[in-house]
Each structure stands twice: as C-alpha cells, then as structure tokens.
Length: 301
Image 1 (spheres, rainbow, N blue to C red):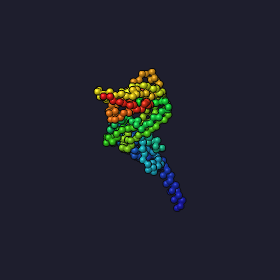
Image 2: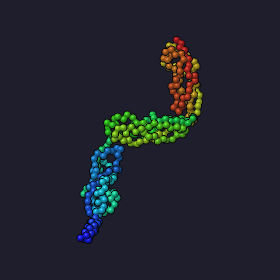
Image 3: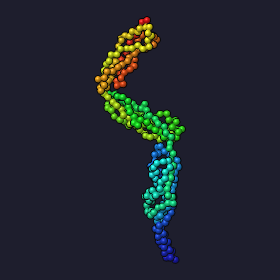
Image 4: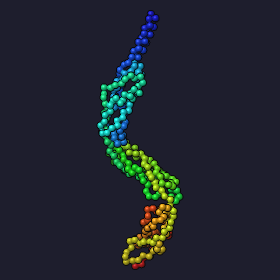
C-alpha cells in the first residue's frame, strides 16, 4: 500500500509538471499611461486606461503572474495632432512581453486605444526682476537694461486658479562681483504650486546683464528755477553746480546734456537754502553727487 501511494504521488507530480509546461491562454488587465502629448498645455479629459490582453504562456508563468499583486502598467506614446487621438493596441505588445518573461504570444480583442485632450486656460506674464540684486565690481555698472528671455512666461491651468495669480517674478537672487556682460539663469518663484493643477511654460529664465566700465567725470551745470512768477526775479547762489557722474568709457566722446533745477514753490514756502535736483541726464551716465548739496535763493520783486 505504501509503495502504491509513493507511485501515485510521483505520477501526480509528473502530471502536474507536464501540465504546467503546456501553453495556456489567459487574460491580463494592463494599465495604460499616456505620454507624447504636451502635458503643460493639455489635460487628459478621458482615456482608455485599462486594456485586457490575452497572453499565451506556460502554466508556470501564469502562476507567477497570478502571484504578483502589482498591476501591470505600460507607457503608450499618444503623439499626434488634435484633441482626440487613437493608438493601436499592437504598440503595447512589445512592452507586455518585456515585463512578462517567458510569454509566447500576446493579443487583444481591442484594436485601438482612444484619448480625449482638453486645452487648459492660459495667462501670460512678463517676469519681474524685482527680487534680483545685481552687485558690480568697482567702476563697473549696468549699461542699459537687463534683457529677460523668454520675455513672456505662460501659466496653464483652471481659469479660477489663474485669476488669483497677479504676477510672476524670479526668485530671490543676488549676483555679486559682476564685471562683464553675460547671461544668467534665474529660477522663477513657483507661485503656481499654490494653486493646484497650474503649470508653467518654463520654470527659469535667462537674464542678459549688459555691463560697461565707468570712469568719473565732473560737469558744471547752471541751475534753472522752475515755476517762478514772471513778475519776480530769483537769484541763486552759486549759479552753477558741479555734477560728479560715472560715464561709460565707450561714451566719453559724447556731449551730454543736463538739467538741474530748484522749485520756486519750495522757495516761497520759506526755504532760503534749497537742494538742487538733477532732473535730466543721459541714460549712459550714473549720478554720483552734486556740489554744493544746497544753494541759496533770493527773491527780488
């Protein structure tokens, strides 16, 4: 009896091994993750997210597949044009075989996968440089205005979220020891992260900082009285001030024009000693100081 049971057990094991080695067909649900479309400008409105795949493999592979609790996921490239796109299911088969070693063949009763995209609302901003600090080396300075590229950044997302975003600026940045013209990459302050599914067209900008060497020059400029009544005469002592200006070396040959004024209303208010104001000067210059810092004014009627 004992020998019979041993033979029966061995026979069952052999039968099981042979059976498990035979090819069988079964269905595996495969999750689909779509790529290849602009996820910044478009949202996935609807899609075929799971597709049943018929797999032919040995019983061993089927058993191991059943033991794996994790859902199988494959990527599908949905590149194309239009809001509605279709992808052949055949494009999944290579990925499924790679994820399931020992598979003999795969097929499906579904011929294609379909997705529908929806265009997000958008809002365009000109990035602000208010949080950027530019520190130059001695006798170097900004020559013109920094140039931001791209000049405009677009945020995409729900209309109600975009309405809450008032501006877009670079993050706090300090650039020290600047001595020559060059471009700097600056990260944008990610304010969009505070408003859910809002995405930017870019997360950083390039800022070109034009730099020039400057030298100090002095200029004697007459003082003008503005707002004076035509029936009075105003004498200003001294009649001229000395302007100390930084001038870009490349502009030393140019003949600058300046306007320095005192206001008649300030004199009437009782101020005999008035601070002269530099009202106009060339954009390629940088004011340093005015001498004297105060002038005396006398009204003669």
